[in-house]
Length: 286
Image (cartoon, rainbow, N blue to C red; front, top):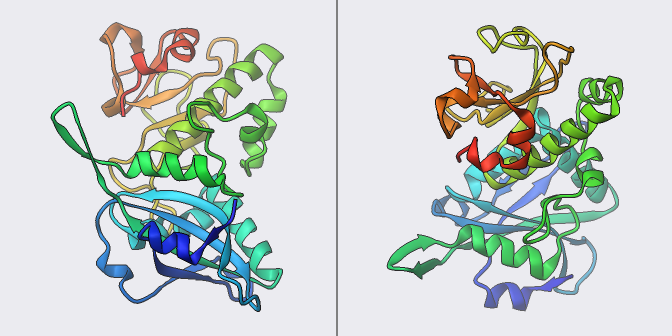
């Protein structure tokens, strides 16, 4: 659904960035006047239009939320263009769109507050959900309000070849388990502004998974290094009869009785994956 400049003004959106591309470089966000002053929670649109079109109507390409203001969030997107699955998808979409003679601008709105049950909370997550429901942005892969992302949507993300090869080699029952883990993982990453990156593996993991490839969900800086204390979980790209498909969760995000877990290190493994898949909120806390 399109949006006009008049509608943006009524909703208190302000133009904060434009997206530029040069040669083979990844897209970059250029800050406009007043952008750096916004450091509070907000929501934002990526809006596109033909450069030579005089009309004030924009195509809604993407909606997102930013806890620390738009500049910090756009830097995360720039890192994601290089380091993450969803970022590489966004990079391709942006480059294809601009190469077709169009431009993309970022409009940002400072979020309001919600007073409920005697508590005052910032409403930026709720505003993102509402805007997504109203405008159905072209590039958002997040779930519809109240629904999980579909398997086809998740599998069509630009995952590393290693993940696709790993999935293809699994038996059907293990593929179904992995697919359920990926759907859950994508949902958490979108809700908590994290990205996925394939790493060669770590030592000190639960037995059977040391130094095996991992798909790690965390925040990453511009050179691809994981930012401290941002890792949520990892999916090992390794499976044997003794050590089947599983999920490893950062101990700081675990929940429930200790006897549900295997391992004493930074990443721990649920003892029963089926129970985790059925009720992940009993094992994982944000």
